[in-house]
Length: 280
Ligand SMILES: O=C[C@H](O)[C@@H](O)CC(=O)C(=O)O
Ligand SMILES: [Zn+2]
Image (tube, rainbow, N blue to C red; front, side, top):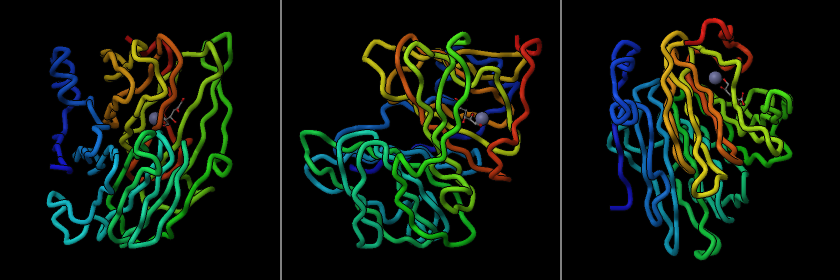
């Protein structure tokens, strides 16, 4: 089977606070996103975001119909963003090819048709990270290069969080219905993301950690600000963040991450900052 779909029901804050490590992982962590020759989708009931990994090797992989959406074609009522974090590859949208290099993204609007994924060189497979949310109108398909992403420089070396947020799917770069997607990169030695922490109840968020050594670990913090928990994540693991949860992490070594949101608005700066004194 080349395509698998996992359903994730919603976990509320009281339930999350009582879960042990495995229970928290079952609710929020997405493991083994990139299996060679396979498409792995997680359908989260948080804003119905679908989070996926597509790893073509010698043969093309296609997404046309996903039974769980209940539509004839995957993109009939959905939009999708794809970021390649592997070797060079091609995404064909309704028969039109788009070449995607490392850290290049493709936004595909509602009604885009069948998606076909290929690796240019099976010895250096492409790794397509996929995010899809329900859409209400058709926006144009856009290839987003690293240069096109809007850059926001944040943090400082003193606070170990000097980083650049690259906004790929953002109203100033590319139209979309719900999706906001970007990639955060760090200055050497800076390991903290998203601290001071924030919440945004009107948008869910999902992080994919990547660019890590085999033994590097992220200590990712989640939970209500007064009831935090941590998850230990390795390279290529993703974590779902409900609107009530903080989403912040520190790495034991170099890493980058892709964040993506869906929900009521697309205002990146609309977040409720959590005062340090409120964290427990
Ligand atoms: O709502 C916004 C998201 O949590 C991320 O963009 C935060 C982030 O990339 C960072 O601070 O490093
Ligand atoms: Zn956030």
